[in-house]
Amino acid sequence: MIGIVDYGMGNLFSVSKALERLNADYFISGDKEELLGADALLLPGVGSFRDAMEVLQVDTIKEFAASGKPLLGICLGMQLLFEDSDENGFTKGLGLLPGHVRRFSGSNAAGETYKVPHMGWNKLEFVKTSPLIKGLEEDYVYFVHSYYVSAEKSEVLLAKANYYEGVSAVVGKDNIFGMQFHPEKSSKLGMALLNNFLKLVEERIRYDDTDTLSSD
Image (cartoon, rainbow, N blue to C red):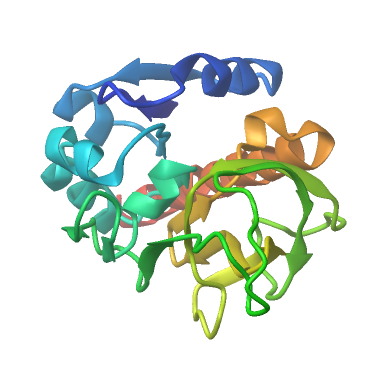
């Protein structure tokens, strides 16, 4: 069962509909015990990093992450997984992944301006093997964001995109994963990425079941 974290700032409808299309069982909740009992968590997000950290159940998310069960952050939810952000003033994040969230500058090295926020379709470039992108081909996904995690020298980077800067598009370390774009709005590749996440969850459940049987 997939738990979608409801903290008042997530795009719960589109994420839940994507899970329905993939025939995945899910629930939406802000209750600590319910969330900790899930097989995996989705942490969606729309809005400000600082506002999100003020209302997010930080201890619950960290406790779930420490359990080893899969956790996936989407858009702002991905940014919250990192150490800190400049949005609306310096703010500490969950610190589950190393990295800093910064704003697009709005001008390139030549002094030419570009649009912020970044809204539209950009192609992913896979940079590291991971079960999350296993068997998939590079394609376009849909972004809507003004802040990003730099893709330069990132140890957790699985796939990047380019919007005048290298953007960390898919990240992952151990059981913690994130997608800066909206997979639920990103056509075939987005749904395939979500489906691969669900496969990770299934593998984790099988592992836990086997481990339980062997210890009986």
